[in-house]
Length: 180
Image (cartoon, rainbow, N blue to C red):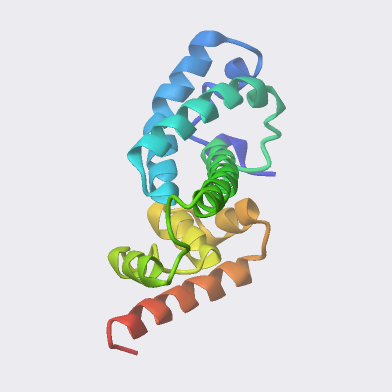
């Protein structure tokens, strides 16, 4: 269980969890930039981040009463945002794959020949080119300044795995830029 006394949101949580709208609104105002920023980092799109942040705020209305104080509120909230982004990516991949296959079948476009993937690969930043497990780890640890323990709890892995992923991400980025 997290040390509730050190949670910067401990002044508002009991009331928000009990249904106090003012306390809940204050919590949302306090954390909205973090919700939106993490969604933006994970999706790479401001428009997608807008949608996800709105969904997270709506979801939070239902979930806050179930907050068990096993982590700081901010860490728990990052987990909700992370899961919302993961679900969003799954839905998008599924729909994108369907529309691409439909376009090929309908003769509206040729099948992928690899050039588009190659071009997209080189246009993305070094972090965006990392495998999702590394990218997500880097975003949570470096982008959101979560501890390895907090990131581990969100991703469902051990702290040692987070440390290893951060080491690998650094190594991969350094190798890409010609250094080791």
